[in-house]
Image 1 (cartoon, rainbow, N blue to C red):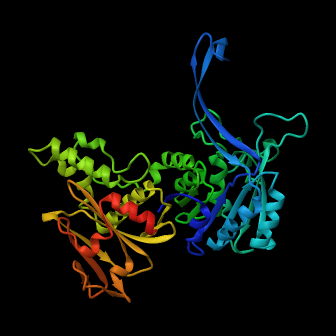
Image 2 (cartoon, rainbow, N blue to C red):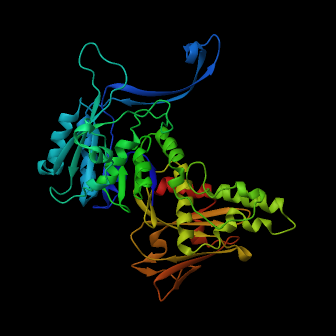
Image 3 (cartoon, helix red, strand yellow):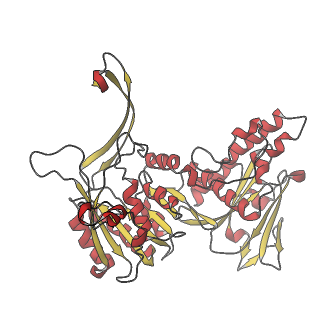
Length: 466
């Protein structure tokens, strides 16, 4: 499942299992000692504007906004090393790391990576060359970046050269028309322009890298269905490259600006749920996916449902609302939606959230999510909870007029591997394999009431217990 995590990448990486990711590309801060800034502007025609354009017409510059971050570290290698050690642990046996850096730090970083991965696992230094921007008159202008390629195993790794894009011959007349039309595979020097300042690809994020460079890495060094990670994700270029080529992505960044850029850029790849077409009614404007890329939060779903009931009191038009479009889905789809809603709820509370298989990782702890969408006579049921490797169960209930939730420690439901059927509302199903919890919203069991109630109670409890 594609995911974006907000927070310091080190504790998030430490929570990952070993050998879980096939490809890691990172573009960490380059330690330039400067504040990196990217301004977004627009121009409108103005006879007294500050710019001259086509046919001598004058234009006025409008500043739309900017993004920036500090690129200064007192001990850069000490900052990077534990993160790169985690990257080595997380990679699968045939996995690859691509480490993107510039001329200032590349030599020191290579020595460190040789120590972590082993010198025999260093495969290439790729030079990304571009010819854009200001030119120094004091020394040769620096117009390249360095990308170091390391593998987990010195000889066994993914390298699909046949899937690589091809580039033109510099002297096509010397190779014949057939070869010239086909082009050639690149060497370890990649000529590629930076992201055009006025191109569709541009997100406005400082230091955004071009999609063409990252796509080449993804296609050649991973396979469809595998997982790609960037834990200095920035504008999320790796995520777009991975999703376009049928890979799963995991993106991590500690910048709220980066998270906003990625969620907007990658919304179509993040947990979007499809459903059958419904009649063209006013509620059709309500999507199951919010602008942040997550499925709607409970608050949003409750609001939508209440509005629909109020707008259509005389008929059942609201039955096709987003809420009721979820109800008939199979359990697996409901579970995925529950995890998406929970991740949005906890993320909005300032917690570090990762979607991992069938559960969440919240501040490094495993959280199993169960969603209840039934409200017959005020009764909800949280079903099919099986003892596994997690720390809490997050039970979320959606009713027409309210949303409720409980964050329950695992030991409150299981004790020594046995379901605690002595607790009111807990029953054992499927020959003792699964636990169910039945709750009357108007008379919640006292033992359970201590672990939540309103969504505000849940988020407050999450901040202290996760």
